[in-house]
Length: 319
Image (cartoon, rainbow, N blue to C red):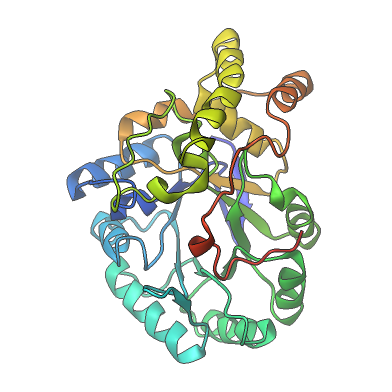
């Protein structure tokens, strides 16, 4: 697999998100998750992303039991489970969360530590100062920010260099192209794209609207509820036809499009099944291919917002 830069490390151009290990898309089990991690490593993936809130520590515990020391791990803190949903960025809370994450991960040091959501009341310069202390103490290799605006990145980076920014980015979520991806490139900050396969909408087969209420969070997501869901499947169908005609897997082509938007971009697709990994092989897209994809799926084609109002709390909006 091609390599890309993540802080002080070269990692596989495609990383691995472990949110699904925590059960947010449905039931899973430890043995299946461990098999999936082994298969990802065999496929050349060397960067694995988690968070304390994924299954309330379950995802981190699985990575800790996996026990690999030859991979780059990232975790996050800052979201306080609700209801109501809240965030905390104060130093005492960040330190507490980091120690708990390190215990679950069975690590004394982690390569990348994100603030999952920004607390508006705390100046970003103060937050960057807190994270700089953790770097200097050897607890973390670098820090990142998630779901932020370009202005926030610039302010934080001026106080202490940011390693990575993680925001949602895919064929149907293009907001980061309105300034954030460019700012990351200018500052030499890695842009880590989560949900690059649109939470499964760019999977091997078209999704069915059987999201289990209270288990799969897509059951309340505007893009996955009617009438938006059917409209989105219809909009994506010609892209599936293009992939079939050119011998691409749908996930592979969707990831290739993300990778083509900048050499500092690292997508982190997620899966609960090792069998899905073979679909992630990204074809080399020509300029003509990218034009065809852009014509079929232009910016803004998606029906419905990427989050419901309750999920947009503490996501920075800048356009």
